[in-house]
Image (cartoon, rainbow, N blue to C red):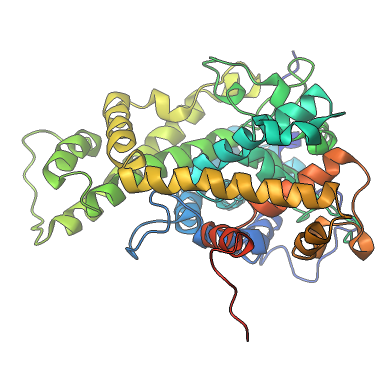
Length: 455
C-alpha cells in the first residue's frame, strides 16, 4: 500500500479554479490564510450564528452557538497545526524544496480554515436536525420522491450527514451560477483537511472503532469531486469506495473534540445545569497538577475560576494531542492509524466522564429535547411542502411555495432541475441551510400560525 507523503499532501492549487493568479503578494497573505478569510466572509459561515451548539436559541448571551464554537475550534486548530508544522519542517527539510517558503504558520492556517468550516453543513437544531431530515426521507410521505433513485442516493438522504452537506457547500456550484470554478474555490489541502470521513454513505461501517469509518463525508453528487482531490494529494483509495484521511484531518477532529468537551461543559455549568462543585472535581484531573500544589491566584467568582481552568486545560490538551500526532506520524502517513487523538490522551477517563455528564445534564435537558422534538415537525414539514412544490409545480398552491425558493436552488430562469435526485438535493440544501429561527419562522408562516409583517 503506497504511503502518503507531505510533498503531495500540501497543495496550494485551488479546486477547479480557472486561474491561480491573485492581486496580493503571497508573502503577505498565504493561500491557506486566503482560504480562512474567504470562509469568514461567506454567507453559510455567517448563518452559523443562529444555529444550535449546546442550547437551541439560548437566551443567555454567553452560551455558544455554532459560529462561536467554530471560531474557538479554529483557534485551537491553528495552535495544533503550528506545533505540528514546526516539527514536520524540522523532520522533513526537503519540504522547503518542494514548497519554497513553507512555514509552520501554513500548517496552522490549513487546520484553522478546515476547523472554521467543520460545522458549516449542519442543519437547524444541531445533530437533531440531521436525524429529522433522515427520518423524513424514511417516512411514507417521502417514498414517492425516492422512486427511481439508486440505493446509494437513497442512503444519502435517509442517513443525512452534516459533514457531507458541508463538503457540498464548499465544492458545489449550482446551475447558472458557475463562474468557471466550483464552490468556494478553496485549496485542495484545505478541502481534504476538512473531510474527516473520506467515504460515501454506502461505505459507512456500523460499529467500527476506526475514526474515519463511522460517518461519511460526501454525497453521491460530490463523489467525483472528492476522488479528484484524493488523487491530486495522493490519498490513495483504501478499498473500492473509501480513501485515506488527510493527516491534518486528525488535528481538526482533535480541535473539535477539545472545544466541545470542555467548553460545552463550561456552558452547562454557567447555565446552572451542572453544579460548580461537581464541575470543579471533574475538571481538576485535567489540570495535570500535583494534588498538593498551592495556588497563588485568588478567585473572587467561580465563573472566573472556571474560565481560567478552561484555558489551562485546553492548552494542556493541545500540547498532548500535538505530541500524539507527531509520535504516530509514520503510521498516519501509511494509512494504518485511524484513532481520534483525544482517545489517546493521558486523562481520557476524566474526559469520558465529562462527556457522559454533558450528555445527561446538557444535551438531554428537557428544554433542549422539547425544541429538538419540535424541529422534527419543522424540518420534516418544510421538506414535505417544498418537495411537493418541485415535483408537482402545476398546482396553484405549490407554485406559491415554489416562488419562495431562492434562485440558487433552481435552474437558470427559475426552471426546475430535470433529475429527481438533483431536485431533492437542491431542496434539501435550501431547508438544511436555514438557521434555527428562520426555519421556525418559515414553517409558522406557511402553516398560517403566524402571518408575515407587511411593510
